[in-house]
Image 1 (cartoon, rainbow, N blue to C red):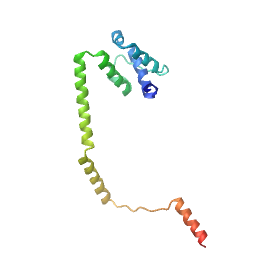
Image 2 (cartoon, helix red, strand yellow):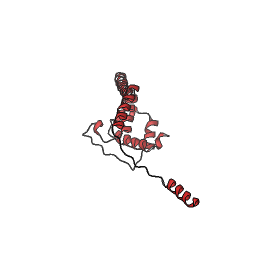
Image 3 (tube, rainbow, N blue to C red):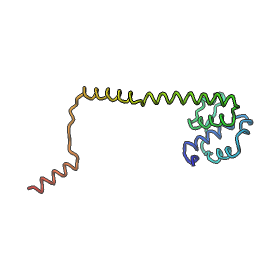
Image 4 (cartoon, rainbow, N blue to C red):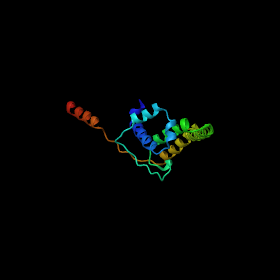
Length: 148
């Protein structure tokens, strides 16, 4: 179960602490099984400090907590117009991310970077001192002893 993962336990605990500061109508929109899961998987020993003068983005919370808050916002706290906006926002972010990945890992760029590295290696010739391993030294020692 994902609830056993330490990151998720921390995230559930942070969500539990943050929900204390949300308006009651937001909490009522959440299903009881979800609230029970957050309660069950949170750690009472771990507390976060919430500064009510800061917005949610600038709070000191983990990325997993932010991700869970986005899911809660989309699934439970958004109306249809907000959901459309969020879908478009997520789609645009994913598209930008995929473009960056395709540029970074395109075959053209992979070969270009390797040829540059190969040129650098060719230009810098270094003398490498070869030393036998301990096993090679032992082998040669035994050969010397038994061949006499």
